[in-house]
Amino acid sequence: MSRQKAPNALRTIGEVAEELGVATHVLRFWESKFKQIKPQKRRGRRYYRPEDIKVITQIKALLYGQGYTIRGVQKFLSDGNQALAFGNDNQQAPANTNIFENNTLELTHKASEATPPNRTADAQSAKLKEIHENLQRLKQKIEKDL
Image (tube, rainbow, N blue to C red; front, side):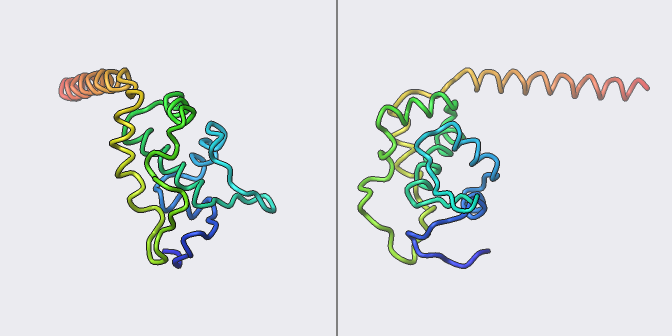
């Protein structure tokens, strides 16, 4: 665990990835897909500002929590919703507060009022699960017959 930084301190891609539970390559990919993520780059390294981290947290919640597609999140953010979950940007977290905590609480409610997530993903997931179960049964039957 890394030492506690000031709430407004810049964070490396590794620190952000660890705190949010996503891989560094995912953050770089999101950076290529979402113009709202603009880390500072110094000597070839990315440094994320608290504003970047808020946007990344929102993107993660929409993609992983709400089932949005990349395109759906792009539309959500381009419709001016990027500050919905975080209120006034002039507010600063207390010094002992981890800026990554509680950033998705209000987001879940607000996102559900916006563009609905892609429900085809749920149907595809259910179909894949059914296929997987059928394959498992066939495998067991073959192993039994051998």
